Length: 100
Image (cartoon, rainbow, N blue to C red):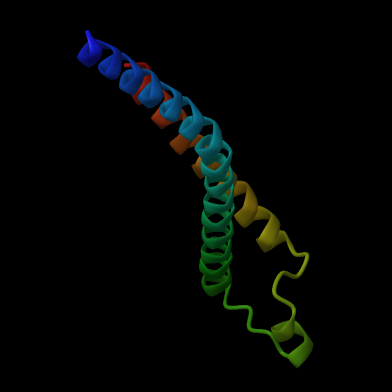
């Protein structure tokens, strides 16, 4: 009888621990995923800009152009559009795999 009570209390404790862990870990995990997605987006965006830049070989002529990391330019806008399109395609592919 005492063993059953002990087992019941241990299982209740483990259930409570699971709930507490999920409540504390979920916000942290979601925040980390947001940061990781932003880093991935920025990395892809910069790589796409560099690819477009190298295709057209527009080399900066002044130090000011080299210091500024993102200059408003059609290349940066186009690179951002292409990266967003790629990320949307990847997320739709993930959702299709999850649905199967």
